[in-house]
Image (cartoon, rainbow, N blue to C red; front, top):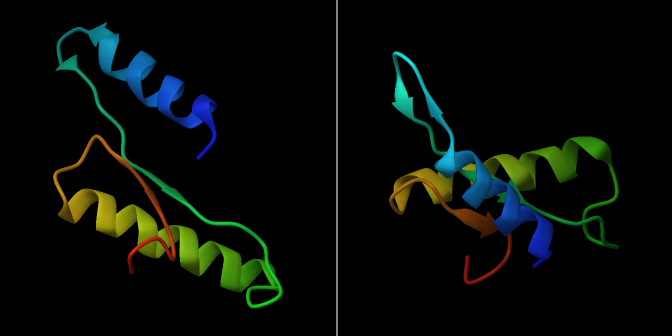
Amino acid sequence: MHLGVFTLRIRVSEIVTEPVGSVTISIGITTCSKHRRSMDEVLKGADKALYRAKELGRNRCEVFGADA
């Protein structure tokens, strides 16, 4: 997985905004492949990975197709 995704997640978690406090993000990742050719299929894969990240505790990066 690209190091930039982890860096983004960590940087966001270090930001403190008033009056909210700290903020975290969950990121769903997928790639284009011979099995997912259309933009709709790619977005659906990323969406599934995002919801898996939230289910597993939030503030995570998950890849569609990895152990799914």
